[in-house]
Length: 110
Image (cartoon, rainbow, N blue to C red; front, top):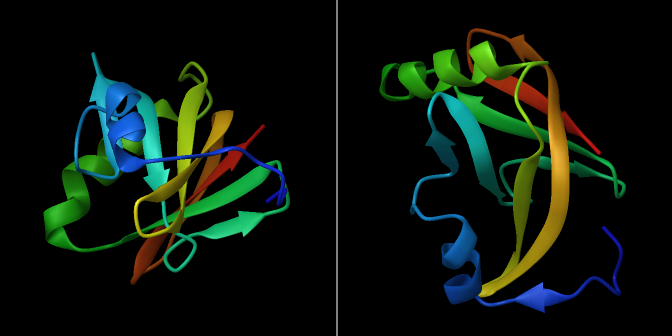
């Protein structure tokens, strides 16, 4: 991630990402996601691997995201830099996913 990227506070994130959950949906499409480098892989300035544990409490989110692969409009991505410090990383496409017994990795590409 570019070190010159403009940072914003959580209150600014919530103006666009109107939920405390990691994935915001509207009409069965993903609107935005919030990422934490501790849980997700930020690969350069143009790729993110967004990981979700393959556990029962996440099955609905996983299924909804799988249905959006390749068909969803651009998704606004917010990346946590520090406590109450976020980066509006811009818009990404959800391009693929890999499912294992322990987690599902969704690939987002600029």
